[in-house]
Image (cartoon, rainbow, N blue to C red; front, side, top):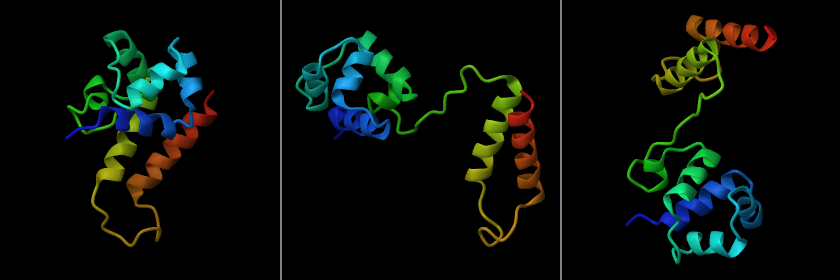
Length: 121
């Protein structure tokens, strides 16, 4: 069975936030956050939306409907979005060589593009 409060607590701790810090971000009290994390209170939709944005996850993930986490590409330009997608594909691809032996040509291109993107500003 899905434990909503546990998911909230894990997401908060992964962001290194205290209950008090999170409460301030969403204009609630620490006791309200504690109530959410202990499954005593259910947050309304506006609070759920704020939490999803703070944690960078979908509402589906937050509510346990979807098990996948999301990567927000908001505020990135098209070139940066393309690089993020390439990195995700590369991490998902099966490893054909011994790890850490050397970069494949594709990995070398991704690294070069990343460096170029960071130094282009």
